[in-house]
Length: 115
Image (cartoon, rainbow, N blue to C red; front, side, top):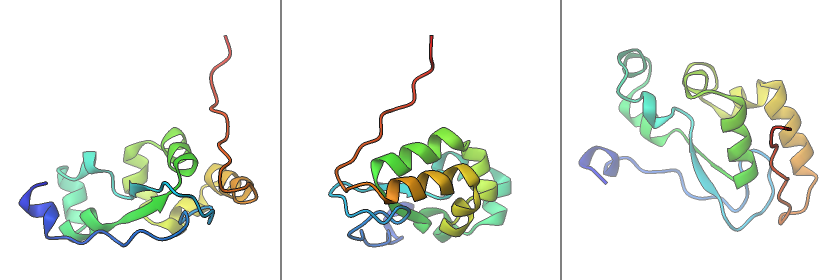
């Protein structure tokens, strides 16, 4: 960990996924402003260093995976850099609603392209 990231506090880990609300043991950190765009000039003008390092959601693996399947990192940084913005995306909102009704241990099968 370098000096820059160590000075910013990551939001505390909640007990449940911040999108679907399921209480699962393993939560992952989702950077709302992807780390791959932190050095790009237009994002450095748009967001402060603190925002870039602390804009994090704690998500269950299925929610995290679905976001990355549906959105590019560029789109995440430009249009979906908050929980509320993510929930405006129809595919993500539909998936979260569907997943929230499932038990905590449920893992959806991955979507693989048909041959």
